[in-house]
Length: 115
Length: 112
Image (cartoon, rainbow over all chains, first blue to last red; front, side, top):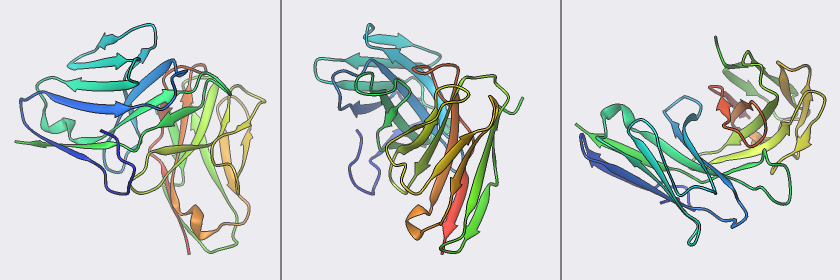
């Protein structure tokens, strides 16, 4: 899950296993959610998004699940590969009280894939 | 097709110096953003521009100014740099607000 402090939570998985990265979001009015992957020295890379009228969305090897009741978002990566090693961020869009462009990012989870 | 291009990639400043970070996009997107990322933290929005000709403050605007020069370019200016502004700065764009944002590879700024 997401961290409050300076040390990122780390998820360590074996190559070929499935990974699940969790995120708790803060605003029940948020209606748009995005997962990003960030490799060392690079900018965040868009993975998948989901809007609040859905509870599941699938991409290539990735699935995002949204549980609005408990304000929880998860990213599932199937058959995790060494190239999936990175820091993963969830972001929510604060649809109320300001611009819809204002994404709020979580603090990230570091995924480490063991060969 | 470069996407979002940021210059410079690295910069060291002394306290009190001024600096403009440049961002250009070739995606013809309407909205552009500036974020800062500090160690162990997610990204925090400094300023954004929903469309050409408009700019708005984000979560941490103090000490910064922006200019949306045209649809392609969105610059971030530090008028009097402070050590607390040492960070990695990311520019992003999106087709419209509430759409996926696409990021450049960042400017690593150190202020001594």
